[in-house]
Image (cartoon, rainbow over all chains, first blue to last red):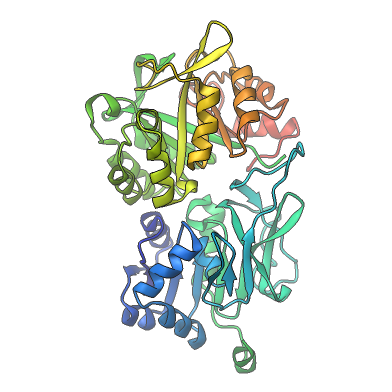
Length: 218
Length: 252
C-alpha cells in the first residue's frame, strides 16, 4: 500500500488516478501510523513552503516523515513535496524544511529581456538532462519532457543528490533529487503524460539502494 | 525560447462540446470524453474546459466532465466558467482540475484573484480575458462568454491581474475566435509585453501558419486551439510537427 500524505495541499485526485493507472493501490491519509506502516510514501503538494511546513507540523507529520526516510521506506516528494526535503527555503521569508536532502530552496532566476527567456513561474514542459551513468535515470530516453509549474527550486548541497536537471534562464535547476530511498520530482509525474507515468513507475520500483554506512552518513 | 505549449480547448455546454464563431452561434461538435481521450492520445500539452453557460445560469456540471477526464488524462486540466468563489475552486480541484480560469468574477471583484492566489497559489489561478477590439485602438474585456461589456481596458486589466496574483493569462480574441483567420497579433503582442507571467493565446488559429505567425515574434508561451482540432483541419501532432520543422521546440 502506498500512503499519499494528505495535509490539505495539492491535487491528490489526479495523483491517485495515476497511481491506480499503474496498477498500484494507495490511500490518502494524514494518520502518522498509516504513513509509518506504508510500503511507500508520497508527499505531494502545491502552494507555499512555509505554509506547507506549518500544515505538516500542525498534523504532527514532520517526525513520522523523517522516520519514514530514516527507515529506508521509499519516499517520493512531488513539486512542493520535493522542495520540503530541503533543509530550508527562502520563499516568503526563511523556513525550515524536513532536511532529508540538504540544501536551500531559492527563487528561480529571471530571464529579463532575453528573447529566449523563461517566464517565472516556470510553467510548461521541459526536457530533463541526466548523466548517462546515473544509476536511477541514466537510461531515460533523451529529451524526456515533463510538466513543471514552480517559481522556486532546491539548490542542493551535494551534487550527487541531483539525478536530473533542467535549464532555466541559463541556470541548471534540480529537477530530480535522490538520496537512497528518497526521491524528489520537481515536475508533476501525474501530469506529464506517458513519460510522467513511466517516471512514477520508477518510484514504484525504487528500493533503498544505500549501504548502512551511507544511511548513517545521511 | 522554451517549448511552446499546445493546448486543446473544449467549450462545454451541458453534455456536449460546442463551438461557435466570436463565441456565438454554438454548434454541437461532440462529447467531451471523446475529445479528452483523443487529444490526450495525440499529445496535447494541456486541456482547457470552459463551461460556457455556467456564468449565466450558475450551473457547474462541468466538474463531472473534468472528473471523468482525470481518470485517464494525465496532463494539466484547467476549468473555467462559473468560478466565482473559493468553494468553487475547491470543488474544481477536487474533481481533478489543476488550475481554474477566472474571468467574470475577477472583473466584478478583482480582490477575488488575490484571495484565490493566496489560498491555492498563483500557479493554480489563470486569468481568462475575452478581448474585443474597439475603435481607437484598444481592447475591451468582455464577461459571461463574450455577452457582457465592462468598459475595462484589457491591457490595464492584465497588469492589475498579475499584481493581484494571477499565475497565467489566457487571452481569447473575441473578434478572431472561431474564424480560423489567425490570431489577433497586436493584442497578443501588447498583452505579452505588459506582463511577466506566462501568456496563453487563444482565438483564430486555422492552421500551423497562424501559429507560426504568432510565434514569429515573442508574443506568447502557449497556444490554445479549438476549431482547428475539433474539425480536424490540423491535428495536435500535425501542428507540433509543423512547428518543430520551423525550429520551435515542442513536446512530441
